[in-house]
Image (cartoon, rainbow, N blue to C red; front, side):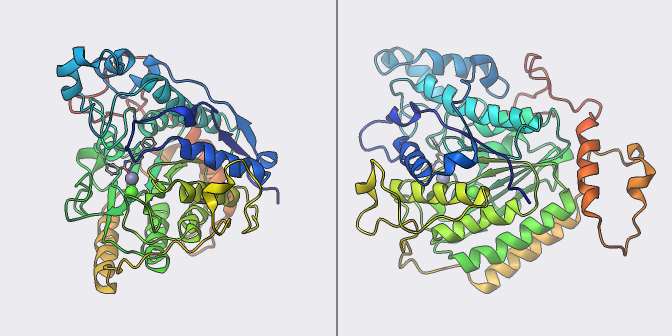
Length: 433
Ligand code: LLX
Ligand code: CA
Ligand code: ZN
């Protein structure tokens, strides 16, 4: 069987932006990743694109015009004249003003958005943008190093052709900006695995944040404690993803692959290996659903590059040698020069079996409350697709037929039209989709 068609988005300028001295976010990590991707020869197996740049208008599909206009106008030189806006839009400290800030946002957002368009048009099965995944950005403000929420904007694009979009987030932080945007709808199910407790940023993502109104039970949170290792993570990840796939039956998946959940991350406290992190990607890919794969946090540059290179190979069904190929950044990977060095730490794993069993069972109970595969008008499905008896083995072709049908279904009042002037959103930053 031929492997999936993979579209990969990379702009050679993205690594040249600087958050400023001492800031842990280094966009340069994307250039390191790309060097490994190229030198392993992975570019031969995928379509490599220099991405489209998102416009002011694209960004305003989620964000307020005042906020985006501010991002477009503010510079390190003129920021003294923006005292009020800096504080109103939470820009200055964690989210500094730096040279080319708006271009940076346009670049990573354009790449995610173009990935969504390619998936919608069936031009690829998987779209990858390692420079995206800025899950903390809110409608009216920057947060946690994130300015424009490329994930929300791409999901809005996917919703033009998809009945149900599943958002999965393995960054160590809670995917709060994405959860908040879709908190009131069943068209997007959000599911974040993250460190929770002891004031870990952003402080949200309790198991009991479930969504509200039509979105009740469609926000799912898996709060974890520090030190989680590969085996323990898989014990929760696999069954939860399986249950979500069974109950929700997404027509498309967006996977945020934040690498700050790796062991030895400069800002993290989990203990995942690169293989363990990649196993999550393998699990999601195994469902053969169109996927938009994004980056996220990750502060030990060499391991971020290793992780996302390995995950690119996983998505291509390719195997890579553990010995890194020669590349212009080889010194970053000393002393082992390997793809899978031991990055485990001595952090004790505080996730006891009892704690994880309790999370799994609460989440499972909640999942039973959600309506299966919402937004699909079952009466619209021709009878030959419904002829399966309950006890028969599922026909693998059914999913494809269902997808085709879902693609044609445009539920009344649920179509988000990005061309309308934000008239389908309420004032809180929740989207009515
Ligand atoms: N979680 C996350 C995901 C993507 C980006 C940034 C973050 N933020 C953090 O990891 C974090 C860490 C400590 C304190 C507060 C936030 C991101 C990715 C690319 C470019 C910019 C931001
Ligand atoms: Ca997460
Ligand atoms: Zn993070």
